[in-house]
Image (cartoon, rainbow, N blue to C red; front, side, top):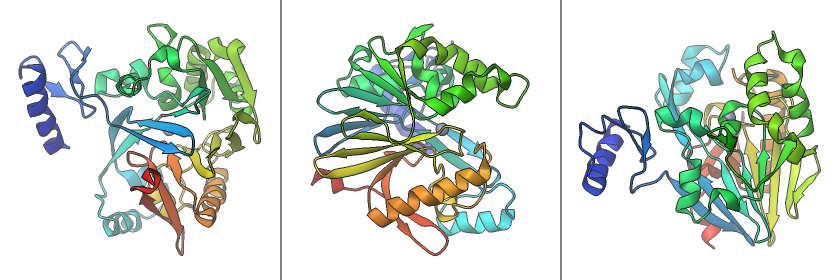
Length: 329
Ligand SMILES: [Zn+2]
């Protein structure tokens, strides 16, 4: 990443005329953070990837990335650190650090423009995240163009982008929330529990939209060709979505598996962020057994950008294969 930033810095300084003094830190997304913490627009937006699935057009945006320490503590909770380190090394990854990214996706069905999750929003700007809007604009979509915002689950990295400056980030949108997910987080009974922080966020970011929202359960259709499925465990009402158009399918797996090696090759390992760890592991098996058996592509919110790929079933789990040119043909 240091090397990467160096390249960005040279390019940004050349194209935007930013001096080293004015831009002490260059974010990975391509925007510059000035000394006062304000994000400055630069000529290079966040990474985005756009491709067609039948008649649907998809735009994946890298909302931001975050370096995390000790991936084994999160994605191999309770495992022998040497076992985790060996698996990472076998996959050409360091054991002490990892990069975790956020990938909201826009699906333009031709009839409706539907956004799945909203990234870190204003809460991420100080460290270079919250780039969803810039990425959508770079692909020709304005905030007012979004017809529907679908929330897979109500963790901060998925809902923080719902509001900008205290108002709706997507002024013309209606909302789709999981019935069970909403009931859990909006319940005052969360006060005094580990979910209290999440409850407070949901009161600020989700509850204000309840009147414009449709509440769904597994099997419900978001729009023609987009079907919700229950994938509980990561959170109590975590939802995933099957996209189908022109005879092609892609599954939006949201946070069913969040490390492309540790959680796919060892799906039974417990994950710190999974609220019901056993249910989440069982769900991972179910979802990725299906993805592997039917050979369908999937998009995982925290998979390496552009976050789309396939899995092959192996002895203990699955091997991730990033997409290449499958959608160009
Ligand atoms: Zn997440």
